[in-house]
Image: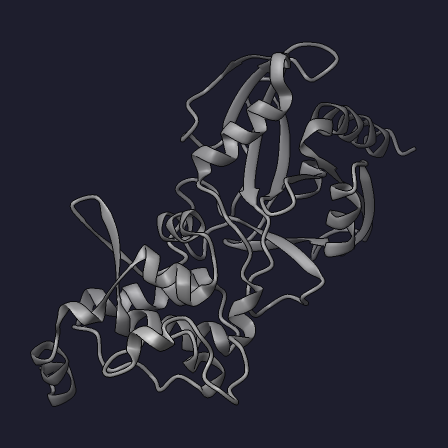
Length: 306
């Protein structure tokens, strides 16, 4: 163990362990959003008697990596991989733009908790994080939006979600549902995105949707703050890299939040095929059944060459 690591271990105290409440206050997010991020490995944490905790030094590293453009998922993966091999070292010094949201210590800490220092800008890229919900809550909200059209569904925490529905919705559906967020780094602030990671898929592996069992596949996102669902054309994503980003414009989300089904065209340029135009849909939760019907119609029209 080198001198820095030894010093870290020697000075370790409860002040260096953060709770969900601490993280939520510093990122200005709801506690349930932080809990979902930890569950989805978008923050580096560990559990003590079923409660999430985060090493302060890991949180500082995470802020540094996210601030220089890493996605929350990749930042967490890097931090946790290092943590498996050695004790956490001292984190890179946080830039002033992040200093206002780091845990306060020493005299005056209570007074300054969560408040930016005078003359220091706000939390920069971190303020672009948006609300997230757990996978089980995603599925629950999707099912609730469909209401009485749902005849049967698989367990809420199982991914993908499989549904048996009443006409005119597809009788058997398989739903890949993701949080649609506007995270720091990587995307313009005018876009939300989902990250395609399949159950069991590892970094470097290609991913595919399960097309078996005669079920219609839906690729969906959910913007929790706006209570808006997004439906992409799943057939245009037959094979994809680990953690592929799929986007939707913020203006499309806003239009849907106003109470209508919004359409957006995206030009896709697959590496091994001809460019094609995707039509994606976004809708408020009460209009999800209608949007799914329209999604099916648009996909059929594309396949028919119309």
